[in-house]
Amino acid sequence: MKIEIWSDYVCPFCYIGKRRLEKALEDFPHKDKIDIEFKSFELDPNAKRDTDLTIYEILAKKYGMPVEEAKRMSAGVAKQAAEVGLQFNFDTSIPTNTFDAHRLAKYAETKGVAKEVSERLLRSYFTESKHIGDKDYLKELAVSLGLDAAEVEDVLAGNAYEKDVRFDQREAREIGVQGVPFFVLNSKYAISGAQPPEVFAEALAKVWEEENEKPKLQNFESKNKSETSYCSDDCCE
Image 1: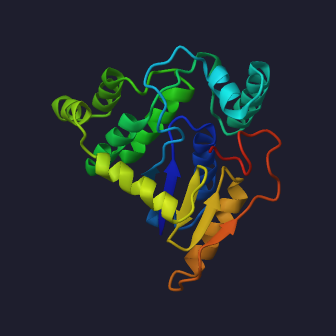
Image 2: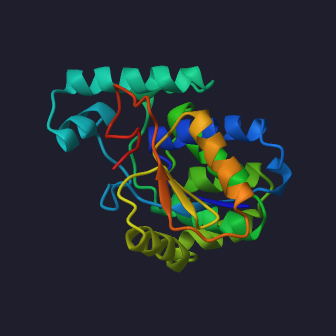
Image 3: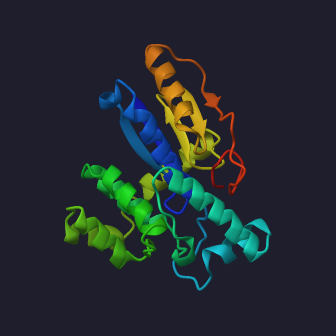
């Protein structure tokens, strides 16, 4: 079974949703036959690599709210993250552009370590408050996972894998992705947002049972939507 996941490395619900999917997979009897592919999505393609604004100021401007309200919302998201074992440090996070991070992830995919790089990028941003738009840090991260320093430097210095990132983004538009995380199972079912593990479990079981069928793409929605999120259905836009 193939699971495609559109996400961005500065999207809090993408990290939470990833953990909730992993929780569902723990009890899935066919988890060893799951192929997960991470797809590129930029929440803000025009974001600056370096900015003096805090994440709270950026959120306040984006959603037209006071900074204090942005802090309250972020605290609610951090609480949800803690429930799945994640520590979010919004106070010290470094807002940035994620395009180069996505290019690095595409390179990592050719080396068989896409999952590891994606996990480290998310952790670097939300927990460790690293600058994941900085090419020197991206190189450091990649090398720490065993990737060749010279190759990584060449990738980051040019425009390698730009077409791969753009392809994912174009595909997202074609299938109607408006927010992330967005999961597609075997091109049959779509799950939008960081849904509870039971929603993922239901979808996994259903797709497995219908392995040889081709129903139309359907949406699974949580019955208990979060009261605190950056957008509806626990996703980021």
